Image (cartoon, rainbow, N blue to C red; front, side, top):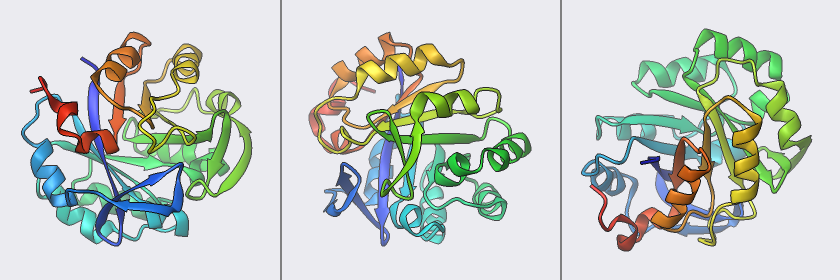
Length: 234
């Protein structure tokens, strides 16, 4: 089965979800971050927990790191963190606290040389998050246009020792209308790197379709709070 990475998005130590990346669409989730982790701990199919510091992404500096380090102690599952990671010190701080992987977004997209250096320093422990409105890459908490096509960016990082590429179609995110299967499939075909799909995943049928396209893992947000999403999973 495709790897399942449920998402916990944080604003002020609160688990929330946004729609299309818009901060004014913030909705508090039914489970707290702590409750979510305890819930996910019971499922072997949950391969990793995905945590994003949303204000960190917007403000260009990690904000929730102390709280995230507290969450780390609640699970033996692997954990990855993104949002506001712009320097080596922040990466090392997370790794020293037991975080397994860091997600690099804006800084890596704007400075490929820096991303190359960091990925060589921490091979296969950094994931590049490519957030796009369809094919147009967005940065700084999805608020700015990077002026890049997603496939051009993918070509620039193909040789770097990254753990994989996390692709989010912002137009799908938070809507529970299904992921962008077309572009996701094109990305799988365009790279040798693992592609992780994020945004819009509704149910297990979406997981099965993503798996059939060759996607390595699926990051699930809102749907992970629906009881029927987990029916039959163990």
